[in-house]
Length: 186
Image (cartoon, rainbow, N blue to C red; front, side, top):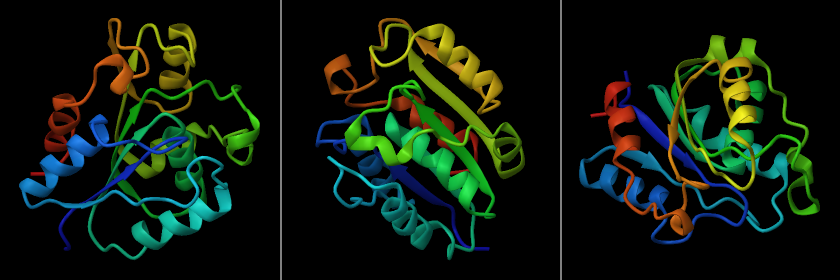
C-alpha cells in the first residue's frame, strides 16, 4: 500500500505564511510525510466545481490512506468532497468551520453544504473538530450541534481560540500533528 497522504485545504482567501496550516505542512515535510497543500484557484472568489476538480485530481488517484486537515471554509469544501467521491478517508481534522448559514457572494457556490452525517460516518474513519469558544463566524452551540449531528466527530473547544488563525495567535498548532500521528501519519 502507498504511504499516507495528508491534504491540507484552506478556506476563503487562503492561508498566508505564518498560519498554522503552513506550520503543519512544513513540519510534515521535515518528517518526510507525503503532504499536499494545493494552492487552489482563485481563493478570494472560489468556485466549488473548480476546487472539487482540483482536489479530486489529488485524492482520487492516491492508492494509500488520505488524511484531510481543513480550516474555515475548507471544512465545507471537505464536506462537498466527501459527498462527491466514493474514496474513503482515514481522517479529517475539521478546524473552525464557519456557520453553514453564513453565505456571502464570494463563497456562495459552496452553500448550502451537503451536511450528510451518513457519508461522514461511512467515508471518514477518524473525525475531530477543533474550534474556539469565541469564534466570530459561528457560536459554540452551533459548533457542538455540527460536531455531533453532521460530522459525527469529537470536539475540542479551545478557550479564547477565536477562529484558530494567525489573528487568534495560532502559528504552530501541535494538536494537528498529534491528531495525525494518532490516526496513522508518522
